[in-house]
Image (tube, rainbow, N blue to C red; front, side):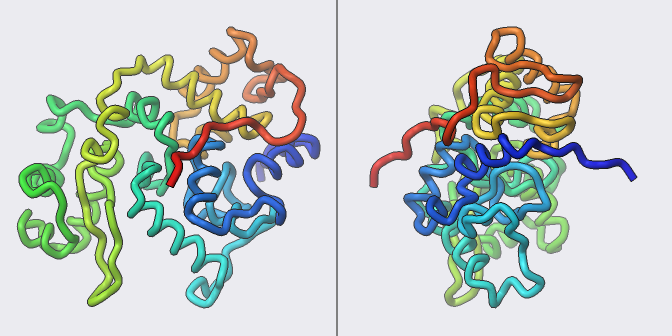
Length: 282
């Protein structure tokens, strides 16, 4: 069995601070969740210590070894994470959707143009890249702007549940559609809308693919301190080749140092928690 590359203790400590894996820095409110996402740039929602990268669930737990329990319905930390996710979706100050490889991720506004440059889709490409089911859903949303899951299924004609879910995942992965609100009464449903309605400036801003790769790699390395082979690709959904291109661009400008193929660390000394952006005020 191939051994997973290990991060040194120095950088695990650095990540503890930046990824909120400390009890003194754990996330317990939507505002703190927004600050956390802005600081790290992008984060998963409900992944635990068995998956690489920053995670809202781990930040809520405030410990490095957090593992999702078998019965998540009765777990208070999982419940809080889910509640915060719903609040963040409603507040609309950070981007949330299933992106590449079906990964549910949060993006800070500053990172949206870079992810869109790599994973987004131009309108001219939709006819030959989207499935007929995805195009049918998109046609309805462009007319109605937002709609609940059940109404969208009925209006689009994509009534088979699995096909509808696949089509919505397509539209989320292409950064076209996002959830805008969640309701539990009288029944559980998402409200779906167009991403450009919530983040118009970020989603129309043009960024060159090479720039996007470099800035995504910079964002992760700033928060992680170092990265090991395959880590950036697993966290973001990038190919390992593209992740390597992004990291090597940081080496070329002197921001990072390559220790060995696939191993990169910040060129500057690592001390304390990484600096991040500022979350919008309430």
